[in-house]
Image (cartoon, rainbow, N blue to C red; front, side, top):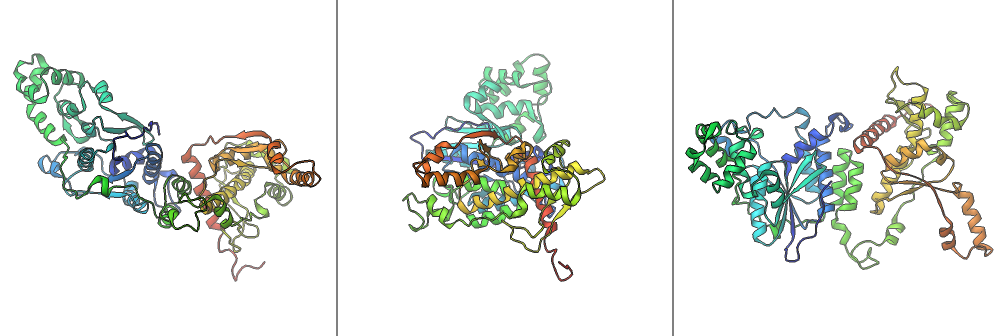
Length: 535
């Protein structure tokens, strides 16, 4: 997100974040490819993913104390009752988008975020009403909307976060920003829009009148009412066009005026507090959506209701479980022998004859740009952490005539990274702490293609030490401490040195697409061992 967070003013009673749910969901839908965001059950989730990612970024960056999301209801509004052509040029809702708003609502419910609707009114009217009442209660307000009508809510205490690229880049529309861009102050922006028109709402403006001319008139005649009153004084073709279409202008202004006095039965400071999320419910919803990475982000950014329970898990008195307590309760994940690249390289060499030496796998894998659609799950003796499925057996899936031995080598390499990501995400979830970097060791760290892909999949830097054989080095350190060569473990820590670091470079959409396909491949390996299988 390209917004810059600012702290609430000292006199503020809180910071309220208001989001136009439908507007931002649609923008997320068109910003992310449909094909890259589909669950194993066939549910499209690109709008949900984009919206939730944006929401988490806003929570993290803006640090609101209060939050609400407003949604439109089907069936039209008072605007369509007056003007049937209102928004009549909009395309039919794309089939993959249908149902995604409900999924967004499920996520928000699990996060304990208030979602609001109002029969006969648009989400913008809800936001305008809440923005007005919140400011009256002394709050600072942020309105996130892709509808320019929201600019009329902008004041010294209300900023609109307007998307200019998908939902990831937002422009802060302050009073000064609105006036710099449109030539009129925020309260007069809808007057300008009434003259110019709004194609997205199917509100035609005055032909031949653009924003600069409209702004000049509004400033010259002290507002739209003055422009209309002096229409006969405006000369030229533009003046005649205004007189010919003054009825459209009056109608446009009537329709684009946001309602600020809806009876929502909501007191912002009391009813819209950003409350703790339900960890179990959020985990269930995110798992169904197959949003593993987003769930990890959510655990890092949000607070959860169980985090403040009792003193048993609060050794440091902060209301949070101490790191020591988390470590004590953390199950150690046994990866199993099949996760190591060495054994897989030997399998490619000895069982398939694809390579003659395990060291050849990197060069072979690097000779193609990607895995060609192939995924390899090395469940030779079942799946270990975090699946724990002894009934699974290895599978090579996604094969086509295009796939060659280089693609298979790459799939083998990538399987190691996918498995590592699975384990790390499980550990993050158990500990409640997000991984910040991954320090690696062993022979596979020589494989730079794998190390880069590993960084891309775990989403954090991967760091290799100067001495990669840590097991042997650890034994040497232990002996050194025992004989007094080292004074203690701190000497060992101080002696550790970084050799190389790989930073994540892959786009998130591609990263998640690959991982979703990996999980589809994993599903194909399950329940293989039954009464028909002879081992």
